[in-house]
Length: 338
Image (cartoon, rainbow, N blue to C red; front, side, top):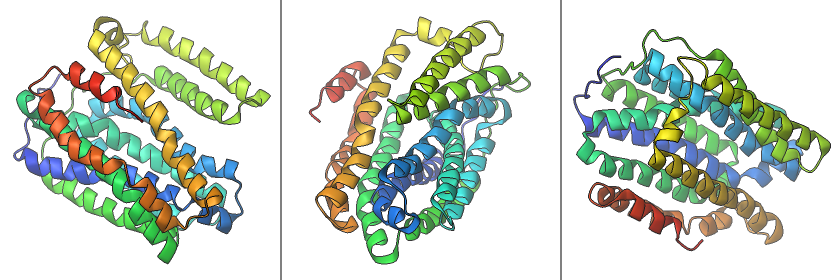
């Protein structure tokens, strides 16, 4: 195992990381406002529009855990930059999509790129900052995510209304180029924590099949095909857990969940929180435009209401987590009114 080295300037590294984490939430929240325009261009139904969003999420969810393991073997910096390049390339190609199917495919491949970005972003951030400053650094990083969610509907609505939905993609592609340059210039160190260890191909394959089957299965319920895919997901999950418990170099070390109660409960809480809140932006954007009859720019103003508060308070929460028991802060935050 290689010892981690601290980059020469953690602040500069964080700026590069913040530009990168700005991209994905901005793209998602802003493109939600353009879905009716996309439907008009490609004659897509509301059901098929969901795959523009879920296709990206499937690409991210399938590859994020395998990407984290690859990064430990080949290097976090290398995989972070590679992920940005892939995300930017397929995002730009999305702007030239000639059909709804092509757009869904490019969105899926963009999700694969973002999986490498998010799998390494936090790991690099915690590597360049000392332990006593990590909470504040993570708070700033989280604040940028919420700022991106906040500005996405507003700016995306304006772009879509005045310049068309493809303009959102071109703006995102340009910011991605800026992020790539910033990462190459500022991240000077490399972290290879599992050099020479074999890659768990079987575990990665089972995990990918299980996640893809689960997402698409839920999308097709209550059709028989949906139930069949959910069953495939259950079998795949069982085989994945059995495989990971039997091999010396698993993709996911499951003993962490058994031995670390805080990590287990924190992961469960995060899953419940994001499951409950993520769908709101997608559903509300369609409701405001299809049912209420708002234009994309006016709908964006409605959707921009909540994230600014999160943007302002995230750095405060990170700063407090360095001084107060994080479980107290987390419990209080999860108890907020929706």
